Image (cartoon, rainbow, N blue to C red; front, side, top):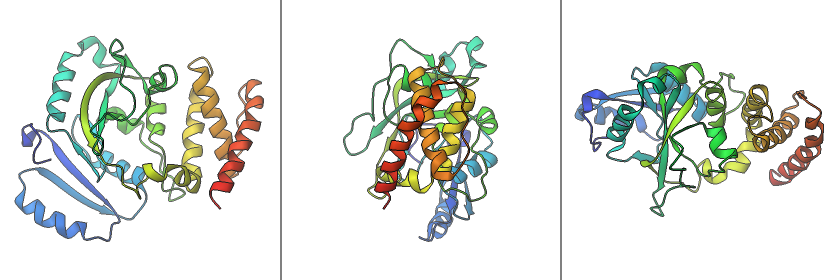
Length: 274
């Protein structure tokens, strides 16, 4: 953060320590005394990444909000590029936009993560990008904070340590679009013991968070938004509803045909988690 090419008085850095025991608080205390950054440190009981993000959202004061994991760092021109892109967006469009989505760079390969974004599509949403244009890979997102506060993760009182970030996008995309750019904003490292590297087991172990996410999609969207997206999300909704012993929503007769596929995934999950 010290190396960002942006005036330090114009952004804040919020560090949420999610119950660590590695001396992070001691290290941050000395850094706070030496740094010119507007840096705020908060320590909370371990509740999982989503709860740490929710905490940061609740105390943040800026216009934009960026989440940066402990093994990531922002490109030195990240904030400057966001500012310049925002200035280019038409005033009439700004009220319809929830933020800016761009590229992450893999630290190990020095390549963008996943697919390039369509150059001719500036305004879209993550559902359309993923299920219509088949864009793959984790993307960088800079949210407008006031909108994010409305669509934040649910508070589930320790019932899960993981809720997919799709939960945020599914809610926000019901009303807003994002501005898309192929600019690289963040550099990411995937650690061997990280969530991304162990995502399948982690999803099964935190099935309730996945259930909430896919339930959100099924409640908000039908097949007309994206038939492919609806099928994938409904199958996963049923799959994790079975994991968590929750009742199913059947919105139309087509849903019945997806249930056997969900059962197959559920059986595979049980074998994987043995």
